[in-house]
Image (cartoon, rainbow, N blue to C red):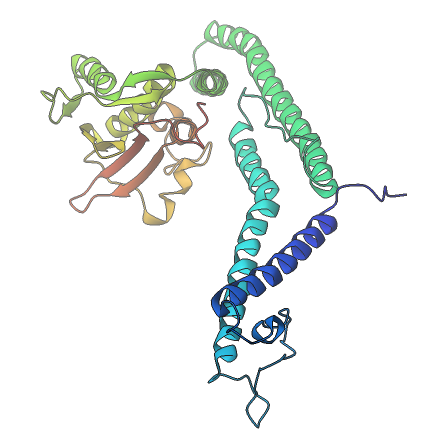
Length: 376
């Protein structure tokens, strides 16, 4: 049985409406009385005062009405009547605005918590919770259900991530033994293909383990990272290896400092550069500091990607050219990891075909930590 003294949404709405009605009546009555002023000399006080306002007004001494029974617009009391309506409307409108803010606060809190829950899933950050002791009965029950759901989802995602990491780790030992046995067998076409298959599996497992490690690092406390210096370092390393990598405005001294994890951001840029070199043969890099964000552009001179697959390539294990081996085409996790890490930093990663040929990767990162980023 419900407690009759329980704080419910109905009681709050009833109280708000009752207070707004009483205050609007009093405000309308006092406003009209103040405008009418004191009664003339020799006139009884009651004759100069309007009746207590009501909706609709019922008339009173001295209130003349037109023949059709409409409101006395041309009389002084008729003008005061409209002032009375105006005052009441303002009071009720203000009460409605305050009440809407008051009653919608739990919904805003639930929306913020849901947004934070979406960011926390799949990472090592704790799941958000709502206060189960504040608000009406309906709000407290909603908070209890949300907290239970949040805990359950976080437990399931953590268990799945742990299981995937454990399986990936444990598979590497038998795969290594299998590869060693194949390498000691008499070389032929079958053993060579088998060795390549084992290497591909080992590379895929390494990518999964790396993704788990980066997810854990991205959930740590953010640091100040100079993206321009990070890109310069990666470009220099690739240039020393003989790759065609150019950095525009390399002499720029303006820092491009963003909040985030150095290892995670390094992986994002490294994956994009690796794709540009592997599929386009070169990488032209540009770093620009804008009003509230940093823009990183990486252009290549490759064949590009079909327009209908520009978003599909961000799916895990998706490859445009499935005829190529994983040594030449990759495992299909690079772009998925890059976009996931970029979003955890409050950024955006998109791909677009260039008009002159080739592909452009655009990475946008906020200069300040955003509310919805996963690096909080």
